[in-house]
Image 1 (spheres, helix red, strand yellow):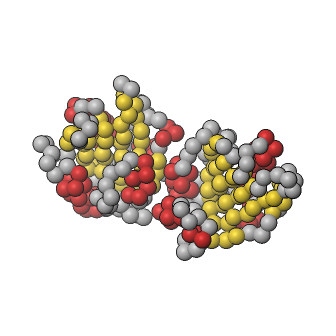
Image 2 (cartoon, one colour):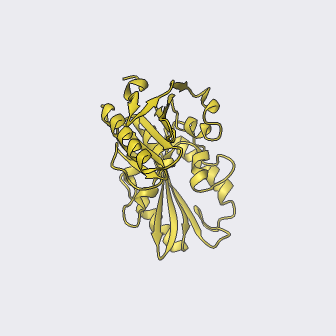
Image 3 (cartoon, helix red, strand yellow):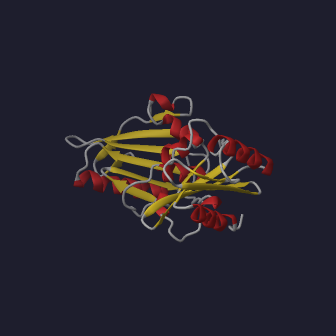
Length: 272
């Protein structure tokens, strides 16, 4: 179905205005501040439809064709916040913003002023759209590789770009992991003894790409490491890295050298 076919012309008395269509070259005309984020997830097309009702707040529906289900999941995971709304294959609602993903589509619905009536319309609209999307997608395989003990499941992020990585865990201004649109990466947040640490998994197309990325990371991030692949950072925490085939496995903010190595070992024993 075309994107416009997934949206109703009217919902709970709110009527649709003219549609706006954007592609990766024109998205900045509509999303000046966040257009680059969607481009980082390889989005194909955006349809924006505004709904108006006399004397009521405006409702804005943005439908993104992300091209693949993994990128629909990725853009959803990037901005996930709020409470699960039970819509699509993953959703969140907070402060008049309801978003969800299903198949290769990401949907963002927003009421400019949150009211009970507007919230009801948002949920009705979301359910209508979700039911019209026939195909379901699959969560990226790399996300399923995280050890579950201590994992914050709502904090898992999937991406391709170092720009997205830096928005969740700042690594470096430069792309020292050599990430690109063909790499799969996922960041998980864990908690131990009241402290949070991160596990980053990156899958490259080839083992040689992973080897080059490891060399780049070691040179930029731990040039003065006292032992290969392990370093204590300025905040007293520990970072450890290992390559396994086309994968890089990196632990950030571990509490100790031993803790970093232990968790890195768990990551290295994953079925990858």
